[in-house]
Image 1 (spheres, rainbow, N blue to C red):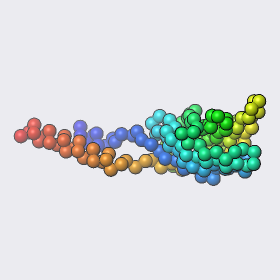
Image 2 (cartoon, rainbow, N blue to C red; image 1 turned 45 degrees about the vertical axis):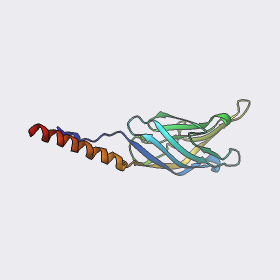
Image 3 (cartoon, rainbow, N blue to C red; image 1 turned 60 degrees about the vertical axis):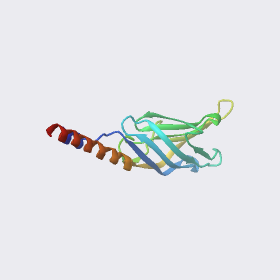
Image 4 (spheres, rainbow, N blue to C red; image 1 turned 180 degrees about the vertical axis):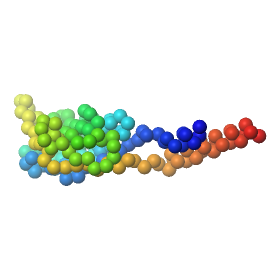
Length: 163
């Protein structure tokens, strides 16, 4: 039983993603990182900087100043609420699997950089290039220490039962 528990480690974790080559119509760009829960696809954290093309503002999207949500396991948006400016990223593959993941670049579901102005005016710039590279988070040393302590405890209990 102990060997089977070791053969199948817990799959839950975080995937750290880095945006690469994100470009929108009109010349705006986006750089930064975000984290996804690899089990649920939930957006956990983000630090994204979108640059202006002259019309849009330069915006730094972080959880402290913006709202973020994952619409699907391959798509998420972050929105600066008071100024109604946001970015939407829709990737070809689920974000729950690490590796290189290109943006969807065609159709209504492509990524975009958008803003809404007073009076209901809304402007959006479609993504024309970009991808993200995801790497599974490496467990902290404390995780390994807890694993070793648990194995030692199990070994001690088995030895006590035999003795």
